[in-house]
Length: 228
Image 1 (cartoon, rainbow, N blue to C red):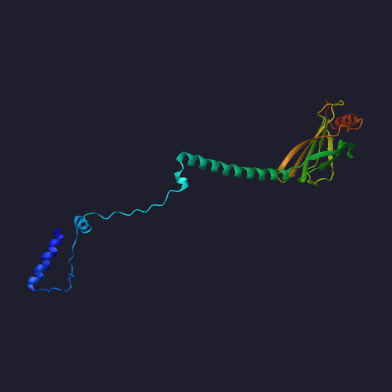
Image 2: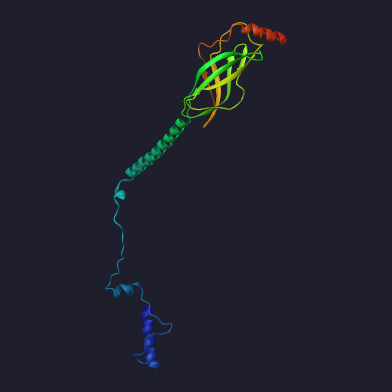
């Protein structure tokens, strides 16, 4: 109210001094009238202007209790994680199925060695798939005889029998008696998933030729070693 009263007083003084005439522009440089809150309330009829607040209606989700919203979010998260895990497991299973291979012995038999320092074994393998593999090494543990396949990579096409030869050299450090016959062959192969070894059973009817122990004894005696 003090500001308004001072402004009106200044106007009356100006008229009296002849500085301006009535009806002139009432704009004064640097002069303004300021109403305080009480004056504004009087101008509005004694009441302050209400504040206008605009809000959006509450969504259905926000009207659900908090604990139920948390439970629903966790359920959705578990469902998503389960779906992703199931997809990855399915992809892994499909990849493993494509990389799987199955080897089997078709035939095996002992053969005399040309060098007469041992016995060889003719071995036929077949890969029943579904993945093709490459044979890298084969070994048969026959007492008194070391049978091994030279490290040459031989592909094993799926469904096609492949003949291999294991070179055997007399082992003078083993027993000289008849002894048990070898029953398994260890095969090392390289496939899509890397290198692995499998143990396969030999055919039951394959036996070293008779008299091979005598030949071994002669070899060991000439070599200057004892078979005992």
